[in-house]
Amino acid sequence: MDLNGAQLITRFLEDRVDAVGPSAAFVAGIPGGALLPLYRALADSKLTHVLARHEQGAAFIAQGIARVGGRAGVCFATSGPGITNTVTAIADAKADSVPLVCIAGQVPRALIGTDAFQEVRTCHIVDSITKAQFHVRSADELVDLLPEAFRIAESGRPGPVVLDVPKDVQTERLRIERIPRSITPQRAPAPDATAILRAADLIARARRPVLYLGGGVTQARAQSAAQALAECAGLPTTTTLMALGTLPPDHPLALGMLGMHGARYTNRVIDECDLLIAVGARFDDRATGRLDRFAPNAQVIHVDADRRELGKLRKPTLAIEADAGAALRALAGAVKPQLRADWLARVGTLRREWPLAQPGRDDPRRPYGLIATIAALIDPETAITTDVGQHQMWVAQAYPFRRGDRWLTSGGLGTMGFGLPSAIGAALALPHAGAVCFSGDGSLLMTVQELATLAETQANVKIVVMDNSALGLVRQQQNLFYDARYSASLYRAPPSCCAIAEGFGIPALDLGFVRDPAQALRDAFAQPGPLLIRAPIAADEMVLPMVTPGSANTEALG
Ligand SMILES: Cc1ncc(C[n+]2csc(CCOP(=O)(O)OP(=O)(O)O)c2C)c(N)n1
Ligand SMILES: [Mg+2]
Image 1 (cartoon, helix red, strand yellow):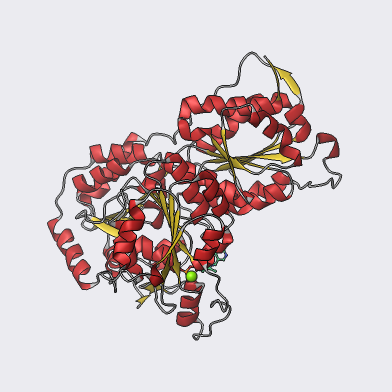
Image 2: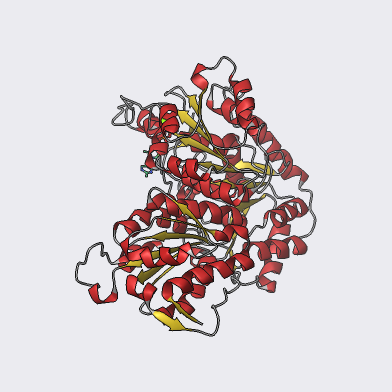
């Protein structure tokens, strides 16, 4: 067949829909000069383009689709300012191992290196925040590079890939027999059988083991294998922020989230453990606190798809490079059933002595009460996204997550502005269940223009803005660690987020003006479709406990 580079791209993406499913039909982006040939081909394709209002939004919409579906999301950005606008969202995808393919326009080949209009050295800029990046030198190269970009993004430990495609590569004609097929992503290796036996032996001999699960378990969609292992070997189980939902909060072995804003008892159980089984977790500083005092008396089994994580921060007793799902299934089959009555009794005592206090849990006008009231109204299939700040940590502490793949938050990079566009992406991929975005009044403004995208797509997204007229988490740290000198953390002229939403064509509900917030929320969540809900929050509410950065997790404040 005879076609041009741009048509090859759209035909490849269309074929991917048959292999991956309907959400692969979405491409989020913004056109521009260097990408107009691709948009010309798009006009003839069956793909559904989501016109974002900022390229960061486009890349986060693609992330939302990827995080709920597990396969690569796709975004388009033009050369120069288009691709530089995606940088934050690409770095975010790298930090949280999210498969993402960004197709960027570039100036025509003859102009490269001439400081042409809208020319930047794209590959150079994204080098350290991608898994791979390719400058495409001819339409012929696309035949291999398109499947390769997706294979890399989705295989092993997933991550972002950028294709830098000059305008005249998009218009260059080529003859091919057939459209290149997408490659089935390769999982990380299966675990070594001897290593699994050794791990099972370490688990059998441990007296106080803890299972420590990270985002890799969600990536591998290994929730049931993780539960099976925990239940068979009697392992109290903690999760990182990224793996919330792997064990439902009412599971008797669930310890909840560890780390900076984890419950005191969770961090104490880890402090007392003699074997830590880390799976798909990377000993991130927000999870471990002061590293040399994290699980100080424990041997460590570390399972990860990425061998560079093994021993990067904590020297393991036993390192296993493997897909989290395969390793958990193998371990669940190899461990001997144990009840561990003494250890579980000790865990119960710590849980009673050092519980997670949730003041105001019964009051929908306070953070925990608001989250609990909303959680009771939402289907477990609904995606929950957050922005970054106190509201994110309150949701992490209080929301009763039941599915890891329905929980979307910017964990590694901590990007304000993640919540709204990722919720749009998630809701496009889950049209019935939709998405709820818990945002902050600061974070919302980072990508507020995506309200226009929401109005246009009518995606089923509810936005709950926890409005404290403040950069709350910054203010809290200034209160606790910087002599309560509040520098640049209170808004003196806060805008009305309800008026903003309405200006974009999104209806709004202000809980500050209703008599019965619980009833107003019931009514609001009974209606499908976009809505912004403003929940006023007192600026002095804190998210506690909190471990001082650099301290041991057992020394939390509050
Ligand atoms: C893009 C970006 N800039 C700055 C920060 C630093 N930061 C972390 S939390 C926070 C405050 C967030 O305020 P808001 O969204 O209102 O949430 P709140 O803490 O008030 O709930 C800031 C500025 C960040 N995480 N991301
Ligand atoms: Mg705020």
